[in-house]
Image (tube, rainbow, N blue to C red):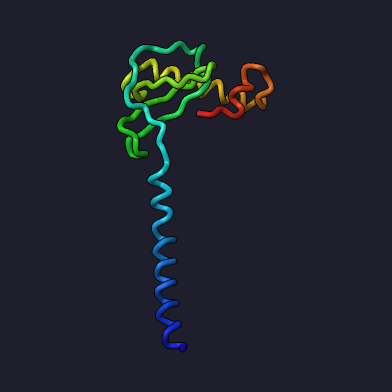
Length: 119
């Protein structure tokens, strides 16, 4: 009896190990990336912007880009800062605003939306 249980147990353990090994890869493959496929070279006025994030090719997106989030919740795709001076200026402006808001602990009205931005 013991001789038939050992092979069955071994097969079960191998199947379990295989399932555990493959699961993280499948979970990563199911993640949908929110990528900019194209960018606009048209300048965006600073007063419309809330925050930004950078998109990189090595993260699985087709191109490098900067995604600006407007105060109304729209996501606007721009070229990387190295390609456009206005993008570099907008990033500097938003970084300065965020730093000031952190210093005053987001107490001013204009800082409330920066406390937990979703981009």
